[in-house]
Length: 131
Image: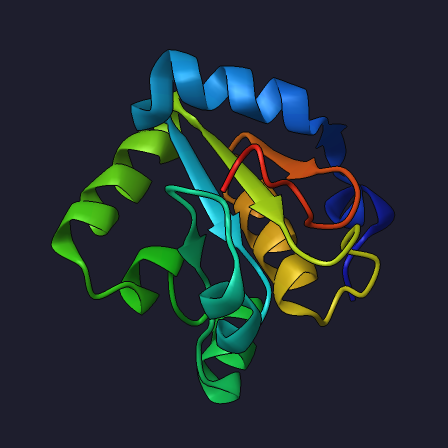
């Protein structure tokens, strides 16, 4: 059972994210926690969609696999590995990750358990200035 501190997330504004992406995108991993259909319709530029089979999501939640093992792209794996120690992960979806069993909640909890700097984008995703 996740603790309250593992489910809490510092919120950042869309303006903060825009400034961060303009200044140093290499040290930021932007993860879209929505389903692949929503991602294909609209997403923030440079965001990666984290949509994996439910069995892999359960294994990730249980700590049986690492986040990087769910990624096939070598460039993205390298970026995730780099940002785990030097960067920041920004999660976004359709609201704040209240459900600890959602993709958003599981990613937040696992990244925090791994000591990674992670924040969540406040509000719903509708940011035409970021897409």
